[in-house]
Image 1 (cartoon, rainbow, N blue to C red):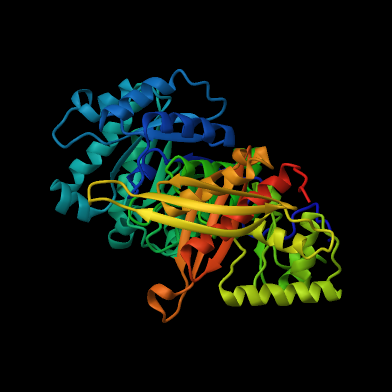
Image 2: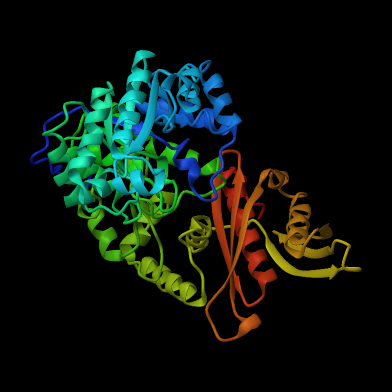
Length: 544
């Protein structure tokens, strides 16, 4: 394969000032935590902040100190954490109507958080001022100006979020601009234009920012939501139009449809726009950070997430694989290693001999794509996929399939037969399963039984018990995940099922698959592959 050592594509930078400094502001811990099904513990928030600092994020918005005890404790704890680059910001609102700034609880909480940066939001849309707050436009302008001034007098860097700015600018541009001037007069260091409802189009963003730049001298930023699936595009458009601070969250988590995904924003800024971003020196950490933020939420990183997902640089079609073997630029817009990802070759009925040869190369198996062996293996693969097998999440099963085709392959063991019995007494009692199995290793056999809390668990226990006599290392293999999918068909409960198992040993993880009309049989096939693969990778020699 041709090795491309430089960026595989020329960035589109027309009209973008070379090396413009762009600052990245992360609100995962505040705006991101408002996402449905997302909940950060205090320890989670500390760990995420440390992770963002290692990535080189300029600003970390830690939460709203007046909103709940956890955020108050976070700001106390984070003062003792040695962040090497990031500046922590506390978030709140302008003073309430009728309050003095010195007596306003929200502003006092922001000061008490003792962060170097404070961020407050105010209303830019007359609809919110008159219909929601129920105050005059002048009163709203006074709230913005006086709140920014109060915080600046406390020697804080002040970031002003102009909430609903683009909706307000679309409906009443003069008033929307007045609110920004009020923040500027109050001494705000940054003015951030917010697409709070996430409904703006890129051309609307560009037009509004160019107009704002004629009226405001303070540096601008963009805070985009993803309700129209344009948050990343709108953020990049804003930067090209003159914004120098970008708000967002890791993986785009956030209220409703989420925020701008900073993983994509950072990658695009650096690799496409060639902007000067502090995170550039740690760009290869992007996948690690994206995975970590989802991991602590007990959620998998979506396979199709741009730049960092497993499928971002995965190639399935034979034509694609044939091309990238000659030049990776043919079907890869960047080098996957730049963002901490890797290229993957997938096997399926769409595969060609190039896919097989490339996978064999990964496994250290010599295979000529033009050989009869490759043709036979491709036919086997397509037949198995027709039966319901899928190897995209089960690379270990496919590697074993390829190795077993060699005449030198010695199987670790064979299963002669198995039997499972299940029993349950009464609705309130837990069920119990017993599995009996006989395995053959070379000329020797082992016949044993084991109990489990279900049939698959009982089979797993019995198989390990039988093999332990021959391969003691089998007990170091652990089962991480087990999934069953009923394959499409018109046979109801008699339909074929596909079982996917994820296993691990030390730091290595692998996936295996089994297919059958019987879920127990399918499970045993996947379990068998899991154990064989673990023994193979541990260096255990099969006993022939």
